[in-house]
Image 1 (cartoon, helix red, strand yellow):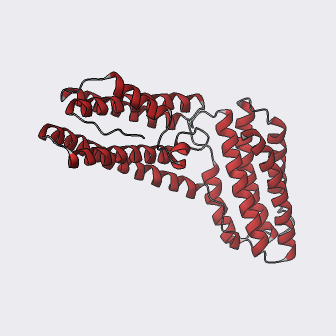
Image 2: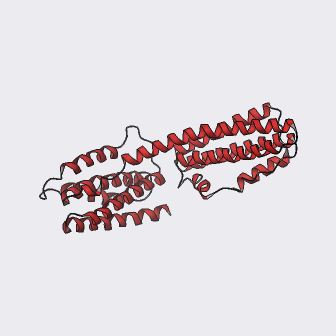
Image 3: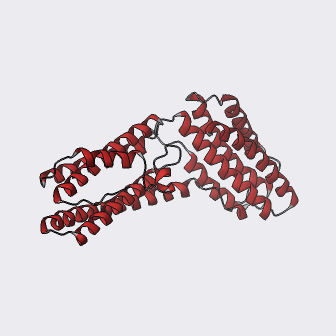
Length: 308
């Protein structure tokens, strides 16, 4: 964000007030944007950020700050023009790329920018009243940044836990074709579930959903006659299948979200199959892994065309 150094205590109060108003409006607009894209969790994050900015706005008014037209216009222009926003900031505001961790990290950076600005004003203030207000504002932003970091850390650990739950088995556990097909059946079933959600939500992918579901069914039957999978892969896939099960009362799927989840699972499956190609115990396993890789890549290509 672009900050203009205030020359008087009245300008400082007006600048702080205008910044809060503009930030609250920006976060509220982002909440609406996330909601339109079915990102309800992200919408809730930005809604809370907007509410918190309004609370700070009231506290600033309580210290005698009054709005000024020039500072209000400058603050609005700074947010609207995204002056000073990094690529990470842009990503955090993109409903196709963001997540709660990125959104909170964006808010942390905004609070840190404000803290640095008010700290600078306090250090260079020429009057006690100016210094006192700047120090108070810096303290408020520092405390806010600390609180946001706690929430960001929680979001990070939640995201990591979700990533672990959805992770594919270790490719090194594949000792036979039966091991590979057992793991593939679960991963393809997960892709087909998200594709079915996408088709039901109107994404127009019903034929691909049927194709992947039939493929998963074929993989489930395929190990017959090839010997049983090994115990290590059986245990790994048991956890994977549990993670793939739909949660009771799960969140509503929008076309964008369902396609995105299917794409993520497809890329995860492709990475697993490709890794097996490099660690295959024998040529039969390697050739089957190559076939699965080609199939996964075809699915990924179709899904990417729907997210472009």
